[in-house]
Amino acid sequence: MEAKFAIFLTLVAALGATAWFAKRANIAPAILLLLVGIGLAFVPGMPALELPPEVVLLGVLPPLIYSASVAMSWREFRFSLRLITLLAVGCVIFTACLVATATHYLIGLPWSVGFLLGAIVAPPDVVAPLAVARKLGLPRRLLVVLEGEGLANDATTLILYRFAVAAITTGAFSLPKAGGTFVAILACELAFGIWIGWLSLRLRHKARDPQVEITLSLLTPYVAYLIPEHFGGSGVIATVACGLYISWNGPLLISAATRLQGIFFWDLIIYLIEGLLFLMTGFQMRALIEKSKAFPIAEIVAATALVMTVIVVARFVWVYAAIYVPRMLSACLKKRDPAPNWQWTFVLAFTGVRGAVSLAAALALPFTMMSGEAFPARDLILFVSFNVILITLVGFGLGLPLVVKWMKMDKIGQREHIAEHEAELHARREALAKALASLDAMTDDRELSDEVVKILRARHESRSNQLPNELDPEVDVSALGTDLVRELIKEERKFIHAQLRDGKITDESRRRIERDLDLEEAGLINREYQRMPL
Image: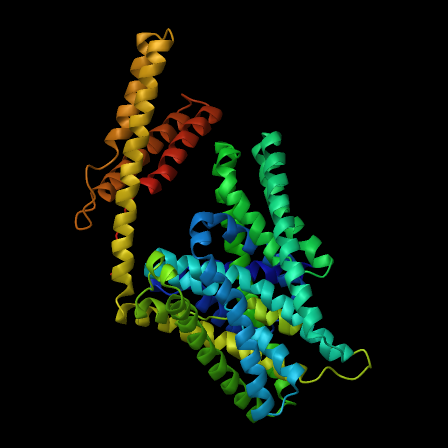
C-alpha cells in the first residue's frame, strides 16, 4: 500500500513539475506529460503501471465531459450544431469505414476487425487539442467546433465500438437493427441528460449550502453517464446534454458562494485528472514494448503508417466536404452562415489529435471470443492505437502552432478578442446604467437615509471608474491598473500580518480580512484585457 501511495505522489510531483516547465517553455502540457510518462515507465525500479480501461471510461470520462459541457455556451454550440454533428457522427463513421476498407484490402484484416480498429482511432480527443489551441488565440467559433466535436464524438465511437465487438465475438450483425439502436440511444440519452440537469439544479437550489451543492455537482456527471451506460448506451450524450442544460440555466439558480468555490474545486479536479491521464497513457508504452517482442515489428509499422495516412486523409476530405458542400446545395444557408476562409477550414482539419479514449477502448478489448478462441488481432489494434495517439499528439500538437502562425489565424483571433472585449465593456456600462436607474427608483419609492444612498452611489461610481473609456490593444491600461492593485493588496497583506504578529487582531479577524482581499484579487482577472499572442 505504501509503495502504491509513493507512486501516486511521484506522479503528482511529475505532473506539477512538467506543467511548470511546459508553461515556461510555452508548450502544451499534454504533450510533455505523455513524453514524461513514457520516460518514467522505463526508470529502473519503477513498477509497470497499467491503465484500466474502466477507470477511463467510467471514472475519468464523465467529469471531463461534464466540466467541458458546463463551460461551453449553449448558444454558440447550437449555432454550430450542424457542423459539430457532421464531424462528431459523420466523420467518425466515415473514418471508421475508410480504415476498415484500407486495412482489409492492403494488410488483410477481416472487415469486422478493420471496422473495430477504425472506430477506435476515428475520434479526435477533446482535451489534448484544446490544450494547444486555446494557447494560440484561435477564433472563438473554431474552438467551439473543436470542443463540441470532441465532446460528442466519443458517443459515436463507443456505440460503434460495442457494435463491432459484438459482431466479432458473436459472429452476428444487422445493419438496420444497429442503425435503429443508434438513433434510439441518442434520443433517450438526450432526454435523460436534460432531466438529470433539471433535477440537479433544483436539488442544488434547495440545498442552499455550497459544500452540499458542490458535492451534488460532482455526483451529477456520474449519474448522467453511468445509468445510460449500464443499459447499453454510451452515457456521453446524456452527460453532454446535462452539462449544456446546467450551463444555460444554472446562472439564475446557483448561488454566488457556490459558484466561487465550485470554480476552484472543478479547476483543480480537472487539472489533476487530465494530467494524471496523460502521464498514465505514456506509462502504457512499457507494456506495449514488452508485448511487441513476440509481434512482427514490420507489421506494426506498416499498419500504423497505413492507419495514420487514412485518418488524416479522411479528416481533411470530410471537413472540407462538411463545410462547403451544404453551402453549395443551399443558398439560404450560404447567406445565413457564409463559409469560413480556407485557412479556418485547414486548421480545423489539421487539429485531429487522438487521446486516451481511443487507448481505453483498445485496452478494453476482450482477450477471447464466445467460442473460446483468441480475439483476432487484439495486440495489433492495441499497438496501432497507441502509436496513433503518440504521433498525433506530439506531431500535430507541436505542428499546430506553426500552422496557425503560417496562416495568420492568430491575427484573426486577436481581432475577435478585441471586438469581444469592446462588446463586454459596452455591456458592463449598460448594466451599470440600468443599476443606477434602479437606484434612483429605489430612492424615490423607499425612505432611504442619505448615508445609505451615498454608500450605494459610491459603490456604483467605484465600479464605473474601473472600466476603461476605450480599449487600445497597443496600450493595455487595464492590465497596468490591475498590476498596481495587486501591489496595493500585497501591502495590505503585509500590514495585516504585522497586526496579527503584534497581537492587535485575532486569527479569525485576519482570515475575514484576507478573504476579502482574496476575492478582490481573484476578481482582477475579470478586468484584465490581455493581448492575444502575436
